Image (cartoon, rainbow, N blue to C red; front, side):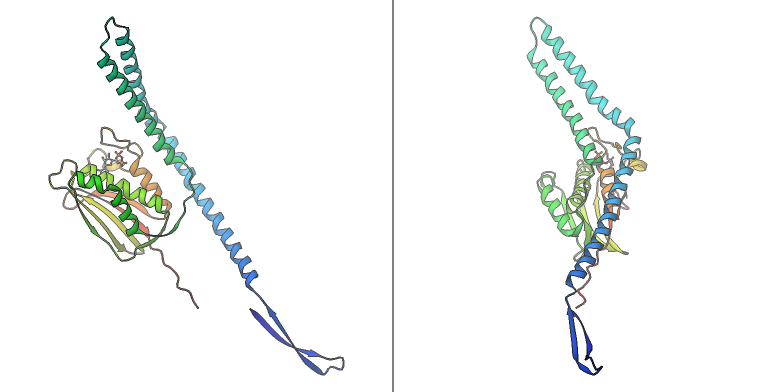
Length: 283
Ligand code: ADP
């Protein structure tokens, strides 16, 4: 409420009393706030569009890589299909071999479909739902998701968490990044005798870092310089989209993702995000 008090003069100029005016300012403030939110929303939409455009131009650059990636399974499907047809044309066809050719062809078709699904995720313009999010919560849900695989591989998981590391992020995207890092670490320690993955969340100037460290073989020389370029992979069945997608998401949150060999061997990938400061109510 806002109020003012004014003298009320009579016809003869004498004071006849006072006028008290009370005004409810709620609607005005609400309108001002709406105006502000509208402005913020427009800035956010603009930023999302920019991120989309920059991803699209990268997509243009990776056209050659994509053609190559899709060409492999498609060529394989054609050869398995031709082989199956040839086998069936024989007088006494070996059905076991036909089954094998058809099965292999299905596997290759699934791989091609998977490439397209991942790529679609990569370019899709999903408006992010940035909310105050606890990094530890995100890490815990990803660890729960991977628990069975971690146990199956006998991986010791060591965690160290900072207190209430709040960031402004879309929790699904955040979990997607952490999941990619954890999956990569799991794959890296596949042949390590005593596999260990360390997941730590720590403060840094102006923000938080989440690092995933493993005791695998470290980053292969051939991929080290292009880790975050789409289709960079050293794995036989790898797509090479996980890290580039994760870095794009991290940058969309105002942070970044980096990776290097660990000082004591293995690899360490670090996600850094700006700290979210919750303003205390002033009164
Ligand atoms: P993909 O896992 O499909 O290959 P990514 O983009 O997630 O795609 O990873 C790209 C490459 O980065 C991997 O093929 C691997 O060579 C390297 N890399 C990622 N994480 C690790 C790690 N923890 N240790 C060693 N190399 C890694």
